[in-house]
Image (cartoon, rainbow over all chains, first blue to last red; front, side):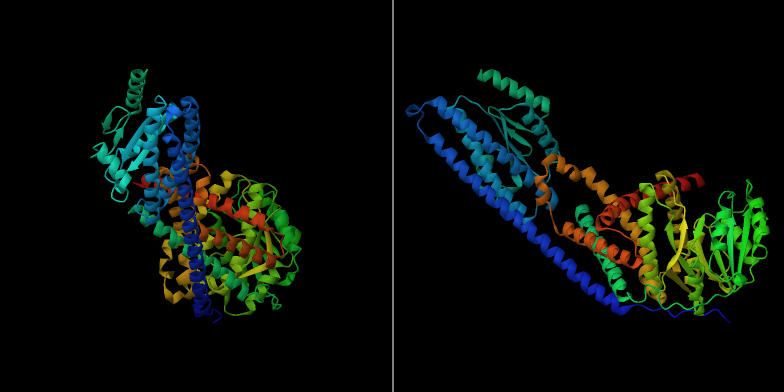
Length: 230
Length: 398
């Protein structure tokens, strides 16, 4: 008989060593990942704080009595500042939207960042109302109230608003997540001010629109509002 | 809910991939002294080399000439050429070789029945202690046969596999396969330490003739007969070893289309063999049953899972986020999974680099990294087409 069978073995030692090392490396990976994520959060938090300061400065500018100052100069300064500020706000909004899609809307750090960001947006929105009063309505402001839960048309509405904003340079869109109403007194204030009970709701300078508004409808409101102003 | 399930699945895949990478690294380190086959004995029993041929009039002479130049004692060497009903002048070329080399070379012709039937035809005529199967388009190094037969001094060894290399790689697609074949040589050598070799490749493998009496001849209906016979030998608990130094050069697909055709055949044949030998999925088969055999299927499932997840995330738009939000978000989107993926990638490059040292082949880390990226992409394509063909075949049957 020249055909011999082998006795099968399980390499317990090497498997155990592998398991221990794998768990350790995996844990290190998770630790580094969590560190980066938390660093990201604190970095964004810092940026939001800096933007809050800028917002305060702009508020201070609007307090200057227009009669004691050349209004045209004041308005040009304000509009330039607002334009810079808007770019920062837009990038921050994109970053937060990305984080939300990555970690989910219930992630504590996402909720915390979004609450701070909403506060900033609410202040900015109110500031622009004030600038509109002082400087002959340079901006077409929109407050957009949405929800990530129970609002199937909100995503579509968001897309319509994005293209609407892109096609009109003076349109400023401020998005408020109604799911954060309880955490953010500013969202609470604005939503009660405009009687927002459902999502999506769009507050334009002269109308409150509930339900999905197409890009065409938004254009119509915009044109009629611009005609009125003219 | 779906998102959570996908995240968990991704972490599970990441853990398993990390485990396997570290396992291979540790195994390479542990076997560093044995891996180079330094303690080889000189054992040259009688051997028959079967070369099945189908329309190979252009290459058969060179293949036989190369084999005849080997350092194997000619009194113990027989070369059996089996023409599988070729339509060209293969058989007349064979007859010339028979005349040229006298007793050593014998030529036979039979009705076309496929490669396995030609090999089986040869095995039935074999009277030597060992039998080797050699593809007609493969070129054997002059010392390879002797290196492989030396393993058979150990009575437990029933089969030995060779170190298959790409014959003169020129095009990029051949160079990618060249790297792949080199890695396969090392990983197969490592697997032999775990009694877990999963294929006795067609280009060159040596068997103890008596093993065919125990397990039967090659399966003539299998799409992947060289894996099928290896699984069968393993299922019977016989030993297959693998050589890292017995070189044989083979022609590989030179176009993407022919590569896809080859790999899809391997995959489809592999799936059938897997199903046929599912009983191996059993702790009684030690490392092979618990780890290496399941890995064949888990690896394939992981490829498909990653593909599926990519499609889902693409449909959800997350892959488009870079375009939508700009590259600034790349940093913000960094999480544990990405960190682990980078660690796995780095460890894979390290393993391949360590492995290439044993092969004495030059491979720089950049080539290795490129290979890993390109190959994972190619493997996914192979598997998608495989599944597509499997599904189409089902429809045709119904």
